Amino acid sequence: MQTRNGYVDLGKFIAALFVIAIHTRPFQDISVDIDFFFVDTICRMAVPFFAICTGFYFTKAINNSTGVVVFKKTFLKIAKMYLSWSFLYLIILLIDWHNSGILSINIFIGWCKSLLFSSSYYHLWYLISLLYALPLFFIIINNVSKKCCLGIAIFLWILESISYGYSFLVPIISSKFSIISSFEAFNTGILRMLPLLLFGAWISGKDLTVPSINRSVLIFLLFFLLLVIEATIIRYWGGDHFSFIFITPALSASAFVLLYIRGLRSTANFRLLAKASMTIYCLHPAIIWLLNGFISSRLFLCLSVTIITSLISIVYHKNKHYFAIIAL
Image (cartoon, rainbow, N blue to C red; front, side, top):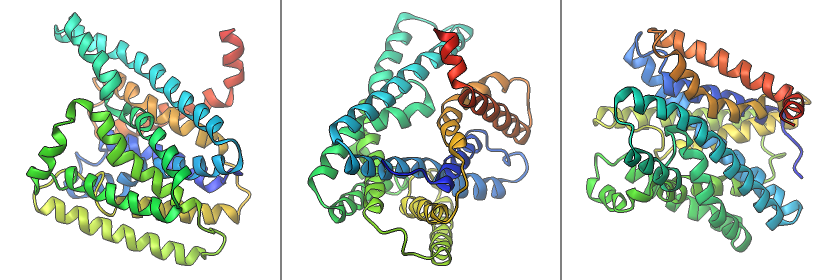
């Protein structure tokens, strides 16, 4: 099994905090331009970074042990996580539906359909997309070369960027994908999640002990500059989708490589933060929901959600064995 990398673990934690910023937009009340630069460029590398990490370490794991066993274990872990958090957020939805006067059996049936084919709550699209993408990802990495993985990833990402980030320019192409909008999770799983996993698989085939840190920093800064330029052009043209555009995977991949190389030269241990990162990702919308009516400042809301969610997640994972004993 692949040895943990301290700086990649730290990167996962920072990425989780970036997701909180995306959902709270801390600078929106201060400056539209600052908000755009921070949220729609810097923070947008977060979710692709998570996916690339998964693709990298999953590929390493099946190369070092029985592939089917690793696949089943990973798939079941994600499925359990998705269902557990889905039912937690169902409680929140039931309260909202009741307060809005729309609670009905039809609404609940619609949620059940979303649970399977879309997403049970807005941020949980990541987990269900992983479930749809993982089987095909497993088949591909076991039957094609890493070079072919890169080619497939680039092709799928071009389709994703056009249908998402540039949908306002090419509505005809985008409309083709709307035919399967009822199966949104399948769509995002194949066009968005699968290529990101494949980028991770491609990186896993590279010797990351060779590149220097200085070179990796320069590559990261170059892709960051290109992403800012691309996002700015989309904004100028009237677009408002900046999460999954052409340069996004290159920036997230270069961030992963930079952190991985730095981690090879360090004994720093951020394993606890890495474990807390997915809990932060899954939990933070509930904290936003709880605080929304009490905090008007978006910056203060972001800071409050970040602190509360991080503390809960870190304390939980640090004392997870005690919670297991109590549950028994």
